[in-house]
View 1 (cartoon, rainbow, N blue to C red):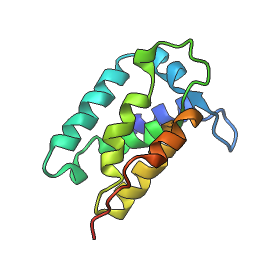
View 2 (view 1 turned 180 degrees about the vertical axis):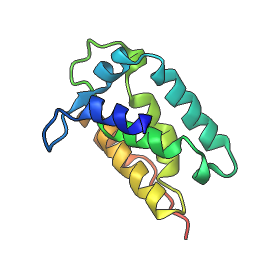
View 3 (view 1 turned 90 degrees about the vertical axis):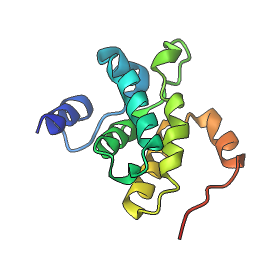
Length: 128
């Protein structure tokens, strides 16, 4: 219930559509969440059964709703670009729901200038 309240207050403006919240804005309001998200994602990548890691889905959903700040004046330690690598790991998951959520998250947190570089990197290998 607390998670639902957080999501509603941060990403809903009282109408039927959601507002775009930048990564810098979100992590300025809640600065402790950035290192926590990073630590939990890295821990989930290391876990043998990371598909069932309890904080994976809530973190991916929050990151999915963030957009990268277009102005580079923000604090680089509050950027979402450091999450691209661990989230990409889950885009290779054998579980379709995890794969889809991770792919949507990567698409939302990549800055426009990084999309080409990301797509030109090695292709993702999806297990069968």
